[in-house]
Length: 429
Image (cartoon, rainbow, N blue to C red; front, side, top):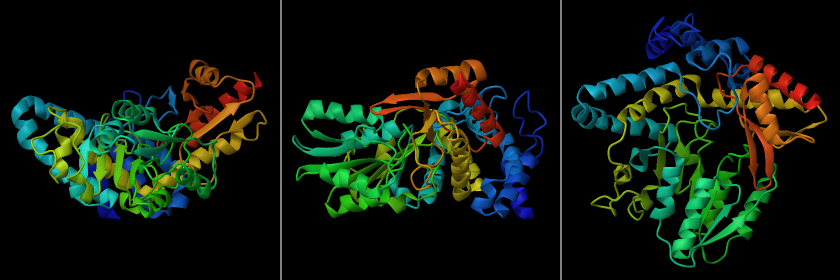
């Protein structure tokens, strides 16, 4: 345990180096380190409810002491150790850009690729590092060979950027989208699987699967869907923007063909960082979004030909992975689900409040959505910010009309009590 504590202290810059903000200069690196050590002594379920340890661990972040951020699902803040790494790599780059960027930092991508592959339970030869889920899935959308009349199955609740990409290919090349829509929440895997099967014809080539839906937090049975698709000889594309480093799983568990995620969400990596996975057998026949001299190569690196990029955020992904691993994927998932359940259970006691998400852990985790009878969700979100300085987001998409609430590991139950009290007052007014 002493060596573990030393490791954490070194990771977070030793005592005093973790200066979080002008308002929290008392926060010390060793306190965060010790809190993580104590968390690791506990089972994931026991750790989820230890408010003292999570409050101490929250000192690793520099979030506002006045604005309560409950929209971590949009983009998550980075712990200070990640912010410091970005600064360090950025300043190093500026000492001699063409040398440090191309000769030093660019070579650091291989070690980073291995870390991401290890986290995903796949081969490093199947992982490419890019900027976000949109870029990853855009690569798949345009890189997979299709012909006029070929079909893809996707839902109207998938993320807009992915919908727009497939609609554009539909307009340009004559492929066809077979649409599914769901009335959420759904607590039955068979309902989801049947919807995909019913939308599939002899011309269907691809199933596009959103693992965890951005609108409400609904978790789809991605493992089962990928298995069903494989039975039919179909390609599977998994949009994991919200599930990776949020739910405790490996990419290999899904057994999908293509997988894309944003690391600046639940991984808390620098803004504009992401990754893609392509099953090795598909790399050679997938065209890169940004052309190279060998577009039919079987080397995953062909998907990283982005031109000049900022190496600092990319290299600081490594510190974000270390921080995530220090907490532990299962502990993180249990804590996030506990926080969602905490505020949901409190608000359901109000007869005017309606939840739009399941409380079962297999169907939702950190993301939760609600509405108040007779109130516009946009007005609720606006009042939370203007009257109580609580940042959420209102969702109006297809048949979803709700306020989305997304806490993170630095969120405490005291923060959520503040949110609960605000909603009770808004509902009463």
